[in-house]
Image 1 (cartoon, helix red, strand yellow):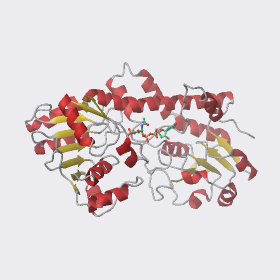
Image 2 (spheres, rainbow, N blue to C red):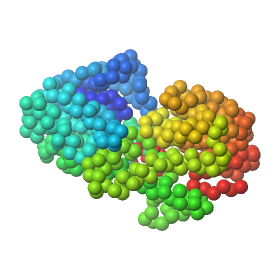
Image 3 (cartoon, protein in one colour):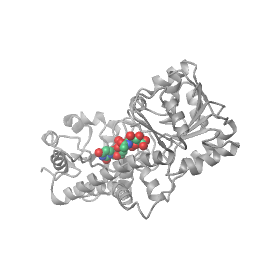
Image 4 (spheres, helix red, strand yellow):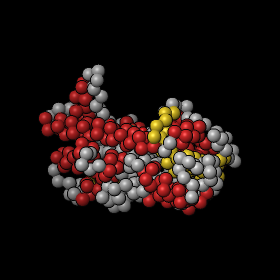
Length: 426
Ligand code: SAJ
């Protein structure tokens, strides 16, 4: 198949890098977003999301003349749907954006086109939701046009590199669709392109993130057990991982982000009678912020009126993304318990989070703090100097929920350091 023009629907963390990469590889690309602010920002040369290297890539794509940003699709050789799939309050997948994108493509669909769904979706979405909407054009999937599910697998923070280097699973509604998908992605992907059917590809994507969620849940549960038995979890994990077939992940304050904390629910929703372990793992990870608050409560006694500087609000280290962030959950629970929280996110200093007071600098966050709690292992926190911090805050208590600080070093400056999953060294 020959691809000259691609239309990418959804210009977020996946769609924008994908559209820009196609454009810098010589294709004509129409990037489509329904949010007028996103369209305007991009058209004016701005960027609405943060990702290392993305600004340079988007600027190069726009400068090449190959990328144009629109609020509606156009006729093209291929269409890629990269819109969000969040969940409703009851954890059921919210497929409204996927459905709206498929419906928006239908009027522009022509014989011989390829349509790709990249958004993480419950098993059978491509066949049962997307295909019927596209077929409202009068064309049949697998006969008149190709249709494939191609999950993205990139790690936020490393999206641009992984987009090109990672292996991709290409699931067609028929063999010809999978082959058409391979032709499209081989234009820039250097990783292996592996063909399968659409429902297998959907399941593979959900299994990958569920596997990680379950493994983080066991690490978090081990941390709670270590806490009860007076064991240092960080040492115990390092020792267990010396076994040649054991690789325990890191405990933390919970699991956030728009992928791992969401995707396992799609399997639970699709088969609640079968997905018991998956559901429990989700619950263990969702309870982890409460465990962190409990550690803080045990360290200080009463939380009421306590001035807390909460450092890090993003869902993981060195990103600015706060979607489903457990750090925000910790702050909210501290506030509910009566603490006075001032949160600081160094990757997004002007961030506003409903109900959570934020500081725009480290100085501002620490100025009245009796307690500093490190919630995210951001790079700048790693090089904190206790003598400098001692001058910035009146209190001498640090709760390190992500095993970042050298306790002895801080102790020498008069600080008490309490670590998640580690008995106090006092
Ligand atoms: N986390 C831990 N302990 C760990 C590792 C992670 O508590 O040992 C926490 C993080 O702090 C974070 C959450 O888990 O809150 C998820 O972080 P992550 O780095 O594991 O993953 P994401 O959500 O940034 O990206 C994942 C990746 N999936 C896998 O590694 C299986 C990525 O490859 C996917 O493309 C992405 O989800 C996605 O979009 O689905």
